Image (tube, rainbow, N blue to C red):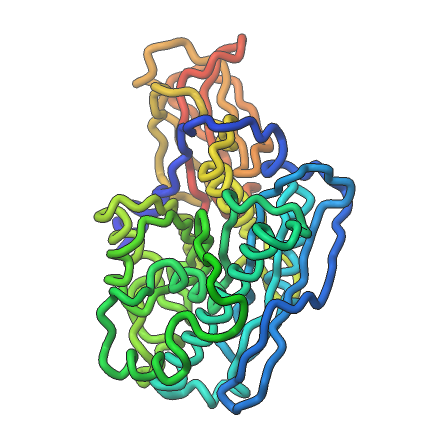
Length: 413
């Protein structure tokens, strides 16, 4: 198990980007100081499982003072196990306020939910709840597609740079949006359940428009079946706790309740993505937790900053920004040897494999902030990490003139 953890802990790749346009500091740093929030915009309506017509609406987060004519947009859906939460869930408000200051437009929609958790304690009800979530997800994207194409592009959105994501149930909505389609083979009862609620497209609003997106952000997400991935190459980024008690990191039942459908979590999806050649950077959080970046309405560090970092890196890569947000941008830079990795109280850097005179070791957190600089006098350097917070660190070896000679990554547990 430990070997498996080490193998996957560093699967997130800091890409060499194919330059398309210069994003500058936009979409990477907080370049705006204020956020405008517009609430209660209606995007459709549909009936709940109790036959009640529900108004579907969203809140939108925009940077104040932004004059860009087309802006990257992220539709970010809340979690809540398909029975609680709405567009004002802290999972979404935290992301909206942070990302809007970086230049993104963030949209937080509601979607249809079950009346209580007891309503979901059956295979049929759970499949139908997910199906309604997929229908509403398609509807919000179709609504925005029509607005961009025909209704004056009210919020100055870039259709090319349109991302969908969410946490927990919201991530399930996003993953099924791109990977579940009419060509997939479903269990007989699943197909019946989905047909009974109107199929995958549903009638939540704005029929006839596109629900395609450039990429998916999955935080603690899963698919009903990993084989759904066979028909689509849309890239996605996965962020998941190894010991998630609600949505399995591997395969299993939500909340470990046997009567609920078996689903495939981020680790299983990543293996399949590798086989299919689908871009899927993977950030693993080695804790017993679920959507670790938020708790009781507050951001939890270092996981909130880490999650934002991986989301932003992913979206900038898909957009083709000319500047990588990763620190280690130069090509053909040797890797430093470091151990133990992952570790806790200390780590040792072995620079003997680098055929150059190294003057300094620099350690950065994943936001790019340098947290320590150490002068190097020997080929083996031991770093005290007791004051480091848990998370991923970026380490580089340089000469006095700033020449980068070696690099690596280290994870503190």
